[in-house]
Length: 398
Ligand SMILES: Cc1cc2nc3c(=O)[nH]c(=O)nc-3n(C[C@H](O)[C@H](O)[C@H](O)COP(=O)(O)O)c2cc1C
Image (tube, rainbow, N blue to C red; front, top):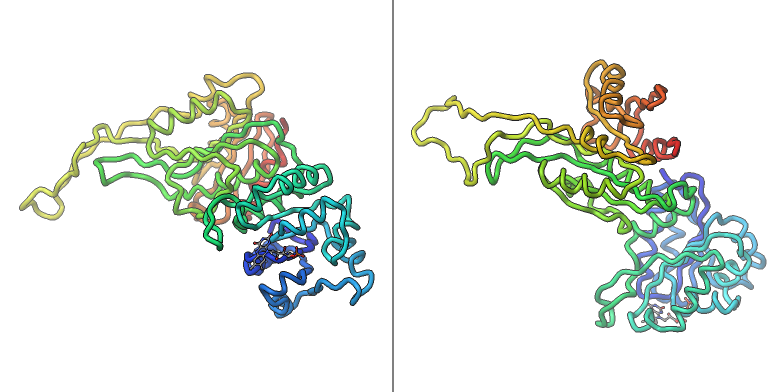
């Protein structure tokens, strides 16, 4: 849980998107955050603050004079103040230094705290230069903006201004707590399971979901990297992948190899978490292979497999000074021995050996051993792939 023990002051202001703040609240709780809520007087017209109370939370209505000094107590409580949805009105008030509501008061008492704005408004309001200038100004004062979505607004207008996806807001909140150790770096991650086709409809593949690679890509983005993810057939793994991550979808060996070698040239760190096929079919039929009419069950269809090129080796041959290559290997036995061998043969800087005898393929958790070029070996007990990704990336020596 990425927000365990983090204190978040969630401020809900009067947009038509207010009802989405309930789902946002639940996502923050799911990640382990402690949440206190202020509901503005206008927001109260769209949703009842009672909804948060029924989850057992402390809810403050927008009357600073009802509970004197609560703005100071709430400011002290907050590690982050999240204004979601953030109205045109309240954003502009922040920029002008107005403090006439409990929300603007709590924010005015928190100059050093990170403040995250999730705007939601009509596209013309969002395009208004007054707002744009004020958002630019607020950036200098510890305010971060989660870019709104583009699409149809409730009023029928279309454009930028819709409340951001909840996952994007939570992602940006989590990012604020991360040290920006990868700022200025370009990280390339590969993820998912390769398909090698026999004919237009049949293929061989494996059970890799891509979750480990997605977790690495997200952790790198949270730490400030520019991230490219070469994704092999991962769409079943996760509906959501953060929009800051550039995704290149690939399917089989040839198109994957082309993307890998071309993207590798401009990356600082490669995490090779994709499950690449060691073998492909010697011949691929351009048409669907039919059952032989009248043949008995048990009739053998002979197909030949040929070994694919070793892509980590190909990468190591073009690797330049300063690039880091982090390999992953699936092993069922002799984990350390096989890991050491691969690390040396492919000139890797790190290798993580997944212990696939323990049923981790396709799941949400992983375990195994990390081996470094310097010969250090570290065991990682079973934990979520996102927790493991955070540990692997924070342990990199670059
Ligand atoms: C039906 C309706 C919908 C509104 N939707 C939005 C909206 O999506 N975004 C916005 O910035 N303001 C919206 N407003 C205007 C705000 O509610 C208004 O500016 C209010 O003063 C905001 O107060 P607050 O910022 O203290 O919550 C809407 C107003 C009405 C009547």
